[in-house]
Image 1 (tube, rainbow, N blue to C red):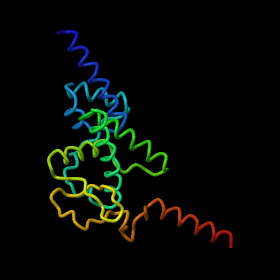
Image 2: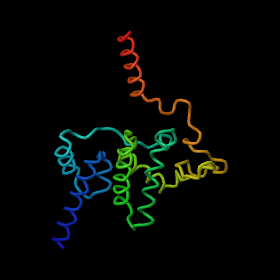
Image 3: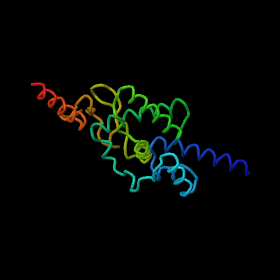
Image 4: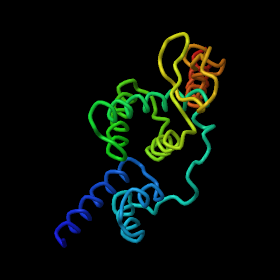
Length: 187
């Protein structure tokens, strides 16, 4: 019995370290492990070198509906569902595997990740609470995160119907301004 407790605690510590490395917030660590808050704080400080951020977790489904977060969330949910349905992984294990795959794909595409591990975890919880669902786009046939129980007939995703400001990030704006400044200097 004592050996099982030691093994369970060691597994919780391993999982907490991995979650902190991936950017998990304290509330997620507390919900997903059986470690004390004090132990989690020590782990967080040791791994990150700073105290964890304070504040509440995201609690609104609306963030997942905006254009860029919706695309990233939908990609993550596709991976999560794959792990859940095809590999037998569930819960936190499926979330972590899906998040690693999400980061790999984002990095390969040279795009900044929009979805944090804590947001991904919250997203899965919103699905479990029947607040969100995957809805098929009537144009491309891909599945995207949408509010649960919204009419799905005629749904068009954010990639098939991009908003006019899509892709106009702050970084792109700064780069464009710098390019104009270089052109001005040359003339």
